[in-house]
Length: 246
Image 1 (spheres, rainbow, N blue to C red):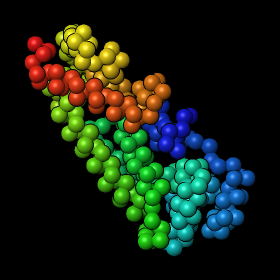
Image 2: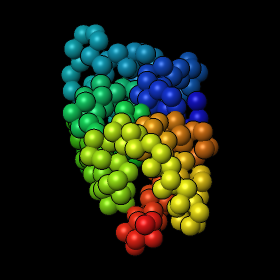
Image 3: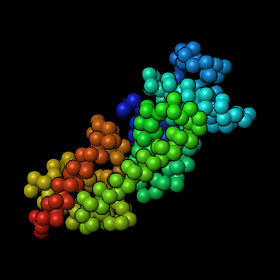
Image 4: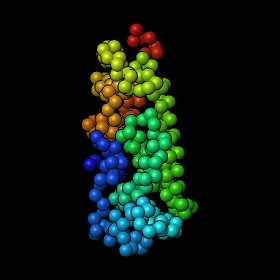
C-alpha cells in the first residue's frame, strides 16, 4: 500500500476498502500515544474504533470528543494516528458518499472524500471547536467534497467535447469506437496531446478505469493524474473548438 500526502491511497479497490483492512497501530506505538493523551488510557486501537462506532455501551459526547481530540492532536505529528481517526469516521464518510457521490467512479469518489477529510483533520482548530468534533469534521469534509465534485464536473463539461462523452458518462461513450480512435490519432499527430495523455483520457473517460487505479500505474498521486488529464483536455477542447479537428 502506497502512501500519498500522508495517507494510504487505494488501488484496485476503493480507498475506504483499503483503510478498513489496514493493520492497526501496534501496541508499542499506541502505548506512546496513551502516555501523551490520557484519554486513550485503557483502550487499544480496536477499542477506540469500537467506542466511536457505537459497538458497545453508549458513550457520552464528552468522552467521544475527548477521544477524537486526542487523535486530532496525535495526527498532527503521527500519520498513523490520522489513519486511525479516519477509520473511526468511516461510517459517516460512507453515508455521505452514498448521498453525494453519485455520478463519480466509486474509487475516485472515495479518494476525493478521504483526501478532503485528511486535509480537514490536519487543520482542525481544536481550540475554537472542541465539541462535536466528528460532526464538524464530516460536515466540513462534505462541503469540500461537493465543491471538488462540482468543479470536476464543470471542468469536464467545459473541456471534453460532447462527441467524446455524453451526459451518461463513459459507458455510452465507449460505443463511439473507431471514431474516437481517429480523433486521438489526429490530435496526437497535430501535437495537441501526447500518446500517453490520449491514453489517460481514453482509459478513464471511455473505458471507465478509476483514476486512483490509473494513478497507481503511472506512479503519481490521484490529484496529479487529475491535473494531467485536465491540462490535456483543455488543449483538446481548444483544438476541437478551433475547428482544427475537422
